[in-house]
Length: 361
Image (tube, rainbow, N blue to C red):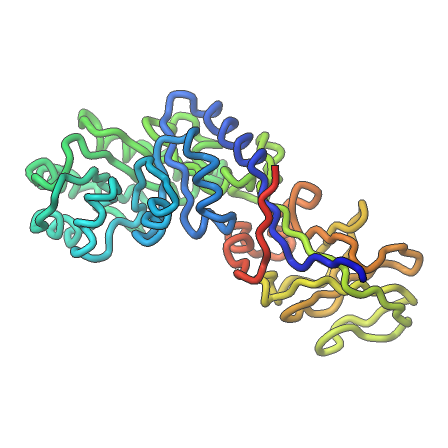
């Protein structure tokens, strides 16, 4: 009986450690908030945090539930809620679990002022410097600071944080304008500052400041479609599956739903055990490559729920059970993103629980 492995995400601790060291070398004077939201960008938050904890100063998550998952898995480093808290009744939980929070609106400020807490909370004031998504307006910073300074539920020397909206657009001056606005708004204030996420870390060295917040680059993926190896990073995830069938296919015959692809010559078709039920996009364009036995072969026909099909070529020697790489070191996910028009961020975070996870190294 042939041993066929289904869709599997292989996660490399070696690559993860390599990437955090590269990041720290790029910003040697900054402390690190490792962003592990969305299940560590699909890589497994408990594993990723356990590997990184000795190398970073804090973890960043989007939701309180993510923070509590880290605590339940033995992570003791500070954790920052990057969107802040959603409910006033969560504040005592935040306080007792050494969780820090961003404050970005008046409602959060009022909840902190009115709360009855066992101990003060570390707070970061989010300033809107141009993303126009979250954060207090530049002309409101002074008033918010005065209120935060008077609030007994907040630790002294709260921090300041903002977020670039176009850090990967190197030809634009918008990032420099955001940085200048942030520096001006926080000038002569005691709190530590953070504005650089992955794009800021790679491309705007003057934005590193007291803290950096690496996200996508931790996982060896660039924030643009340039392969991350050019920045010295190694992909942490290799998404693989296997051939479950190899079929002779005649010229003029279609493959898959709707008959959208018809072979122009006799060939062999490989069937790969992965589909949109695993999170591999249904709308992935035909011709998108996968890596098989040392070469790239194209997807043909529509991606279905559990399978996709590739054109192996008439003289191919591939066999059932052979490993197929959808993305990884051999086939950078940035190339798949460029072909598909789907962000690398979305590709890795939309993988479903059906995909097996295998931790290597």
